Amino acid sequence: MSSRSSKDLLSFTEDLLTRVYEKLGSESDRKSWRLVCREFLRVDSLTRNHLRVLRVEFLQSLPGKYPRLQSLDLSVCPCIDDGTFSLLLNRHASGSESGSLSWFSWARGLKRLTLSRAAGLGFMGLEALVHACPSLESVDVSYCCGFGDREAAALSNAARLRVLKMDKCLNVSDVGLAKIVVRCGKLERLSLKWCMEISDLGVDLLCKKCLDLKFLDISYLKVTNESLRTIATLQKLEVLAMVGCPLVDDVGLQFLENGCPLLQGIDVSRCECVSSSGLISVIKGHGSLRELNASYILSELCTTFLHCIKGLKHLEMIRIDGSRIAEPSFSVISNYCKSLVEIGLCKCVGVTNMGIMQLASGCITLRVLNLTCCGSITDAAISAIAESCRNLVCLKLESCNMITEKSLYQLGSFCSVLEEIDLTDCCGVNDKGLEYMSNCSGLKCLKLGICTNVSDKGLFSIGSNCPKIHELDLYCCSGIGDEGLGALSMGCKNLMKLNLSYCNEITDRGMEYISCLEELSDLEMRGLEKVTGTGLAAIAAGCKRLADLDLKHCVKVNDSGFWALACYAKNLRQVIS
Image 1 (cartoon, rainbow, N blue to C red):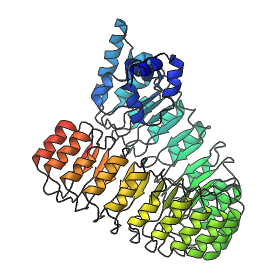
Image 2: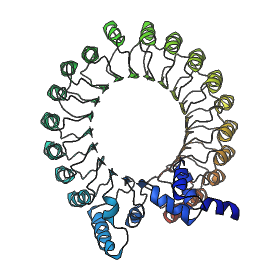
Image 3: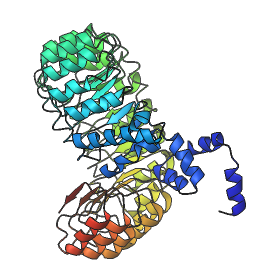
Image 4: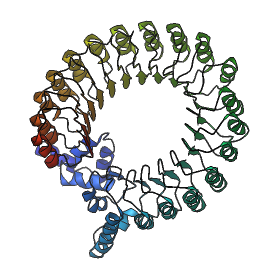
């Protein structure tokens, strides 16, 4: 940057610099901004409202630098415990006397806190944390294996809490839930997925105390129809998720027919005792339903169910994975569900070219389509989708073995906004097809696992034209070598997740190319028999954000590679070897 340009930029007011900063979309861009000069660093400090701490030692100094912090994510610091917060709180409390920004000066404005997987955090640390953050509105303690009733009681002191996620907190019982719902009556969103100690008793009290609930997830709980009877009394509930509830049946869903007047979405997938009869009850009582997930519960789409579907004029998402579908069913969905933006047909029996053509002709607003394991469809069906559904963002075609490069030509020509495509185990995909796909320059996720006809030439097309890709799966792509990785490293700088397992032609040279991907956080390189400790050392030194690494069966990797990991990979959370 020239000296004159620097002076012109620094002459901008703080308000103008802030507005420019807010236009930066990615973390890497914001990082580059901070490195320009002290004034830009100051603007970043004054403007940033979200912080994701990568290492626990940074927690001592980072938060106090951001006075407008509203959201703090500690999900990648699993070793946090009560002692960490005790030290932090005491340090900043004493630090406030010397005029520095104290914990309490920024903590008072904190509204969202993510503590998922913080296994060592107990009730004493939570009590101190909740006391220091009186404005807390959203907390995530999912997968905290030590989170139990005492911790729930401590968290209940956050009286302003509106959003709480407690997925797989296996030690929380009805007693802990009672503490929360009695004191946090303003809850609007609550997830209790996999909280196996929660029963009908806890759900009953929840529905009596938290009358403002809009979202509730009770997936995998052993609750019965009695819970649905009380849930039906929630007048503001909009979304109910109850995946895999084995004790709930059609009788329970019948309670919902005349309850929950604002219900817009329901997920009853994998509820083994629920049938089309129960779903029909829900549909009859909620004509404004927008989302319906009935995956793996319908053996087939019966006539009565299809008749009810006709009345859902505002339906935007339907998933019926694992069902048997007759061809006329597609015509019904196409003619009456014009607002659909997502359809899930994974592992459905009876999906044909003609059915997909009928679907595509009527559902032109589709953005997400899952055809995983629909092995009967061919290029004709994909062509119809591409020509009709031009706003398609996500397309899943895993194990659709009759798909060829012709389909990819159509997608590349018409679906310019496509961001995610899954072509795993599609043996008809080749380099020419990838060249066509590279016309989708906004592609962010590409899965090519077991596509054995793909080579470095195909990756060169992707690397040249798809700079936004952040996830790439090349599992068992035996034609991929070092040169292909070189093309990726030059053109796909935003790659965060990469699977190279069993790409046996890759050597240390390929690892050196990969080391240029500074954003890479998840790397699978299982079974790379030609990679040595030198290649692993290059990855460790270059990929500073690396958090998850799988190098099982890399037989030539020696101690030197692991020493490099220990020295450079400070953000590493998991190594599989």
